[in-house]
View (cartoon, rainbow, N blue to C red):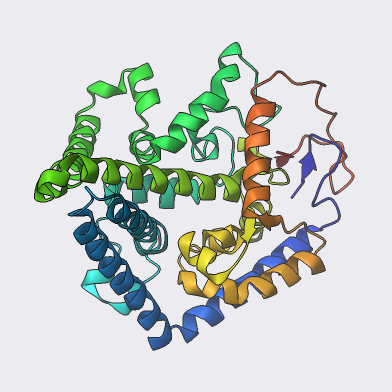
Length: 385
């Protein structure tokens, strides 16, 4: 394998082909050990989280029946916001990844779970599990990188429309669940290329429409009506809870994929990719968030985004457990383990959004020498983010 980078510092220039494959085998060993040790402790964890989330949502909606009174509105809205975050992040996202399928519990299974989100579960699984995790941070293949609406690397051609990407990103954050649904549909490309006439695309659009209608009826009609005189206050509370959930989810995802120090990759970099190379791409294309155990749960343990991208089907409660081992491998192989506090990572990600909205200040550096010292054209090309 020939690996080169188009900018000055190649983070894997010191690794040989054998190093990369050995690293892959060490990561495989971690995964196999966790799989072999899954059991009642893990099952009890996810059942407890689901039970806690449902109790919190029900109690919050009961409180909101009296949301005409300001204290009830504040308490109910805060509780509902947390419940929605838990449902989407620690439960929905991870159940739909198949992390709990080994339990053989039809109530907590990726084939039967439908989440509190306007994106239908089956469409999200296809775009996220099959595409995003396969093509992590590959420009032009992974639309989760910049959500398909932003310039994410200096080597991408700049267009005046990119000046608006801070605004696009903010609006996407506010209505993130709708942005995800549009992304799952590949809506922009379908409309641009005439694919909107395809019967399968129309079927998928109808499914999204049904899901949006169900979510609207639940949050903006049924529960407000049940509140009687508190109708408008409950309506506002539900909107606020959805907004908070969207902003939080967007921030967590941005922190995991977009802060400074995270790498992006050319399409050619994955041609003939081995298992070890795939692992290295996940390691370099993800970032973590440091914080408390409560914050990790609220992020769906995506604060361990590196570990999640290495092992997307392992139970989320195990990521914190294996993180020290994974970090030790980074150190042993001389790779940078990108992590930081939530404020730091959010600032870093948004700084990049603003920076890449502008034309490049300088031309990208010339390619570095291939690992094997040859002058042949590369079969791998890694581009620094």
